[in-house]
Image 1 (tube, helix red, strand yellow):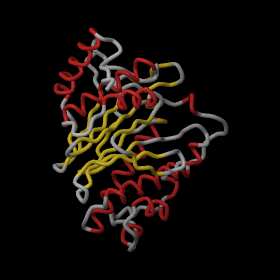
Image 2 (image 1 turned 60 degrees about the horizontal axis):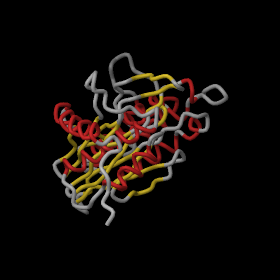
Image 3 (image 1 turned 30 degrees about the vertical axis):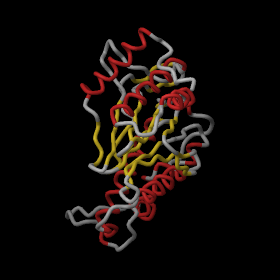
Length: 279
């Protein structure tokens, strides 16, 4: 793409096209797409920070997504306060696991993709449409995933047609799967999912759902060294996003801190956490 020194928009911006910003980039500046970049050979996974555990769960009226704050590079803690949960648009959010830099870049491209569609079409994509657009972005990253730089996001949002929250997971090839009730991705996902399996109940309130996701991240951090638990000394807590019919909201730090204090206080009495009833 060439730029006009006079300040006029380049021809690419004046040419009629589709509603996909990704297709626009592929047609006019393909080198800006993450998956088109040329990298060295071999496994590069140990050379970049990786995000770890994301959990999501639905409740009556919406969906909650929570992410721990640790990024690791091999056995090193690369960052203690990384953010892994982002709003995708007004009614959806996306959490990232995998190669942190590429994942954040993919989220920004996804945000622009949804905004571009809304500007050109004058309406928002359906939740299924948004999930499909993210699937295409992940598929475009497949060459880098084959070199160890996989991005595995978790997508969730409020579906106005169904009046409820929905969760979508992906594999590194872009395969899209809708999850029921709750799901988790990342290195600590097995432990987080097991925790949610015991704690999740239908009909939970938003606060109960947030508490369950924090309990799940605590359990994940208890068994997975790459997942960061609540940092009580630095007061660094998980990022919690809540999506309802009113839109996306990131819970304030103070509110998350109060729930974390309650969870950690209870763990001092019972380190293995709350238990499910036997009958």
